[in-house]
Amino acid sequence: MTTRHPALTTRACELFGVELPIVQTGMGWVSGATLTAATSSAGGLGILASATMTYAELEAAIGRVRSRTDRPFGVNLLPNQPDAADRIELLVRERVPVASFAAAPRPEQVARLRDAGITTIVTVGARRHAEKVVGMGVHAVIAQGGEGGGHTGSIPTSLLLPQVVDAVEGSDVVVLGAGGFFDGRGLVAALAYGADGIAMGTRFLLTAESTVPEQVRSVYLDTPLQGTVVTSAIDGAPQRVIRTAMIEALERAPGPLRFPRAARNALRFARAAGVSVPELVRTGLAMRKDQQLTWSQVALAANAPMMTRAAMVEGDLGVGILPTGQVVGAISDLPKVSELLGRIADEASAVLERLGR
Image (cartoon, rainbow, N blue to C red):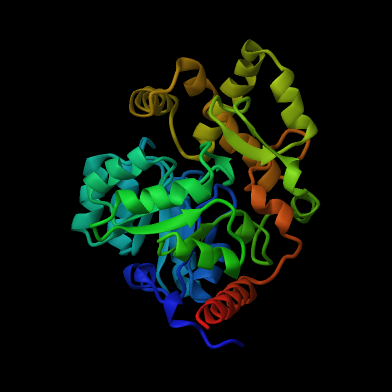
């Protein structure tokens, strides 16, 4: 084992109370208690994905993480979820150290979390988004470039990350890079851009502790670098997924033909998240206002989580989608999380040592 280079102890380590500046993102239907606890136990920051859980399931998942590790961890929240305020109070009551948002939270949500001593992280895809949430008082931002999986922007990480670093200069806000990271060389590159660490999703999805069905993980491992596509056919917003026959069929289908599926998925998502139909409607109205979505995008919004569930939970590749970062084509193994983080730290330390000569 390589002696860990001191440059790997960054502001992110201090902020989150972890050993390594590596965050496992909150992936819906993937980032459960097992993966989250494994990441935190190995020295990174594991994050539970709560948007696809009911309130009771989230409460139970927090308990399961706590039973597996005494290290810091986080919970990813959906700011427009009808019971978002209740979930925030749950985090406060349970003293969860970190809350993360994949979309811009509301100022009052950030304020409540800050007042309770909970560290807040927000994922951004543009410099202006970073400036907006920093103004709310968040503690950290994840700058996700276009190589990232799921909903993503068009700016490559190599261009977005330094822009976000510059945007928060002079503040104490921690910056993490995301999109295209999977090894120690990438961690060093992020540090060179001025970031304080990295966040990864796809790399953690492909680990031994991931609960994704074996046949689905095999598809990921067989996907080349050119095997992903960014499409708006799923829910009206750009999303990077593995190109499958299902995706090609969606892209060929006229827009109106997608709405019946979307309506069914909306009701299924409401049941899965413990949300009533009136609450679902109110959430749609809030999404349209806060995220400036069209009515067609609101109508399609439940497609992504339910079609992801079909693949990630049920293993049904015929109707499911496979969100992924472009980095999937560079991954060929399923290590334990502890092995993965140790390997990244060793490689990053070796690179830093070589550069310092």
